[in-house]
Length: 186
Image 1: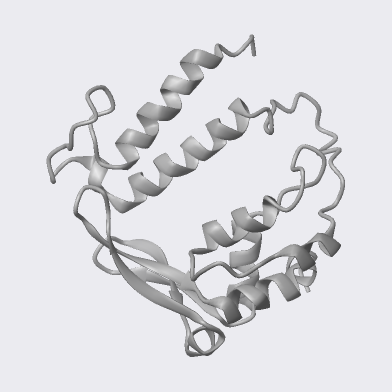
Image 2 (image 1 turned 120 degrees about the vertical axis):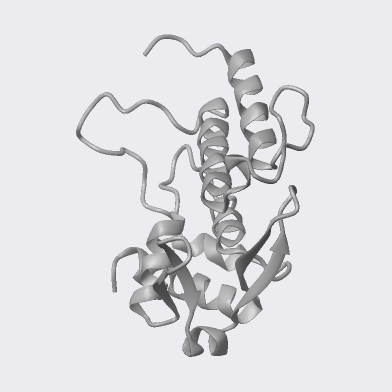
C-alpha cells in the first residue's frame, strides 16, 4: 500500500461519520427515512469503519505485512486500578475508557468482541435471532440485569429508535475486575 494522503483520510472519516449520523456526507443534511443509511446495522458498520480509519490517522493501526502477528506487549492489567466510573455507558465506551489508560501503540488493545463473548459465556448476555430482521441481536439475561446491564431505548441522529445495552457502575467494575480472565478465556 502506498502513502496515505492524510487530508483525504480526514475527509473520508468526516463523510463516514456524517453518513452514520443519517446525513448526506457532502452537505451534512438529513437523508430520507427510507434510506439504507437509517438501517441500524449499516449505522454500526459506518461507526466501526470511522473508528478504524481514526486509528489509521492517529498512527495506531498499520498494515500488517508479516504473518508473525502483533509485536505489542500484553495489556498491563495493573493500570486498571486507574479506571474510574464516570456514568452508565455502552460496552464500546467502557472498552474505550479502558484502552485510554495505556498507550495502545505499545500495548495490545482490549477488544469489544472478546469482552462481549466472555459475557455471553458467563451467562450475562445472550444472542438471539431477531425474527423481524433475521439478524442476531445481543440481549441481556436475568443474571446480566442483576449485574447491572440494562436496555435503554435511544433515538438515532436520524430519528430512528434502537435499543442500546448499557452498563452501570457495578457491571463496569465486574468487567475491570475480571478483564484478565476474560481476555485469557477463563
